[in-house]
Length: 84
Image (cartoon, rainbow, N blue to C red; front, top):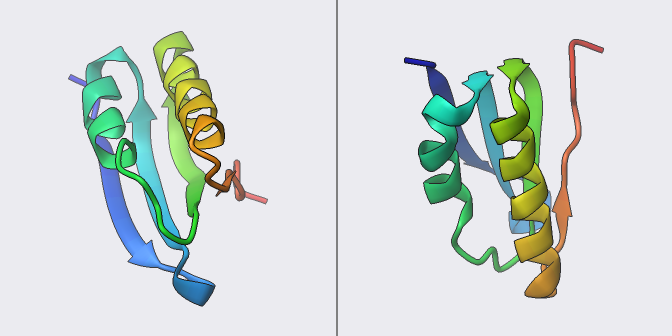
């Protein structure tokens, strides 16, 4: 089973930051969706810099998250992809 670690912290201005590490795959998809389904009062940043692997299901989950956030008029941002 793929291991995905999810940690939520508060960023500047009360923005929620969800830091993901490990593998975002079909095996960890529901865990990711559970962590990102609620509404975010001040927006949400997905920190993907520690995601070692993502399959097509993981990519679909990220895009679905973005679509849901946009549909609710919420801001979302996905910074820190890779080890830059």
